[in-house]
Figure 1 (cartoon, one colour):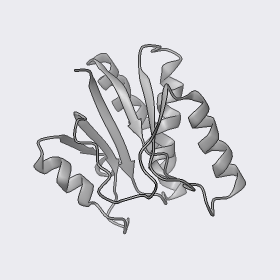
Figure 2: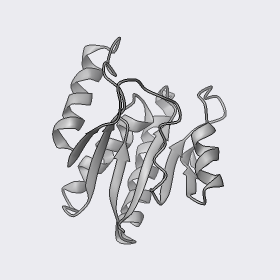
Figure 3: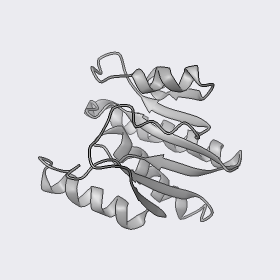
Length: 150
């Protein structure tokens, strides 16, 4: 079974944190790739998911063996998004290795249980639900919250 990880995190990231977050994520993913991780899963949400997907796309240039799997969780995911964010979303879809449609309607319990590691960004000020993170820890998956490094 291949080593893989899933990204999830805050959708709204303070501008002053984005540069450091991108740098820390790049370093962490490089370490994981060197440790044999090749599958990287994103749900394509705004914020951290997008940053993570774009980082994997960047790393694919020097590590062509890694895979970006886009788990499209619901129809109309980009409804209400601005044009810039929709263009980036479509760019990620275009550059991923696999595009998987999950279901008609998004559910907060949409948590892959077969991944080895979860990379998150949930700073204290983020009001989004962290239940999936707690769930993954209960099932023995490793969780790395990059908010502790920013």
